[in-house]
Amino acid sequence: MKIVIGLLGEKRAGKGTFVKLLSEFAKPKTVGCIRSVDVLYETLKIWDLEPSRSNLQNLFQAMEPKYGKEVLTQAVYKKIMSDESDIVIFDGVRMPADRDMVRKFEKNFLVYVTASPELRWERGKIAKEKAGEDTVSFEQFMEEEKAHTEEFIPKIGEEADFKIANEGTLEDYEKEVKKFLDKIISPLF
Image (cartoon, rainbow, N blue to C red; front, side, top):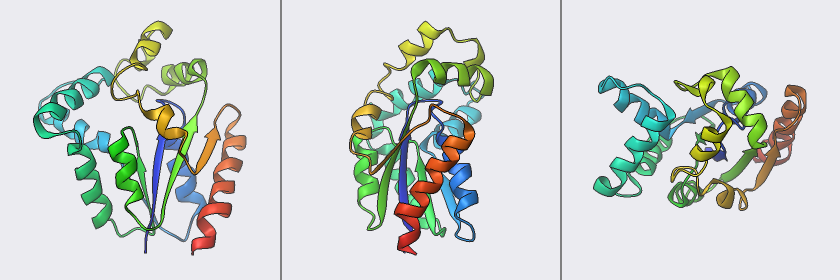
């Protein structure tokens, strides 16, 4: 039976790095990763719109009233169910419905990755994962933190089974991910 990890954290906290590290450290177990934002990316691409954070948030907010609060959560649930990996990470738990969906799986864990706003802003300028992130002022960054898609993250983070404060070096972060794997995941296999 697969293990489902609901991964949450503020933008640029290190969720993507968590996925990469866990995938590497868990071998030979297989790790799949599903992100609800990928559904939004695909939609913006079809519409030939820039995949900026603003467009992603606006698309989600437009979908929600028309198709229901759980439309993306339902898509992720179907993807998790069809994923044959030993461990499936839902990267991007943001809403209470996301948390509730993860908790439906028998073997489930919520992992909260966080870091200070200043550090996350600096990381965004370097990583440039989304269009325009490298030119966003700190004030704009903090304003984006108030978006509907971000507001529940800290509250759900309080309920996490494991929390990582990603404030240090990559080596420090690697130790925390290994600790999670050794203490929480490995005993289940």
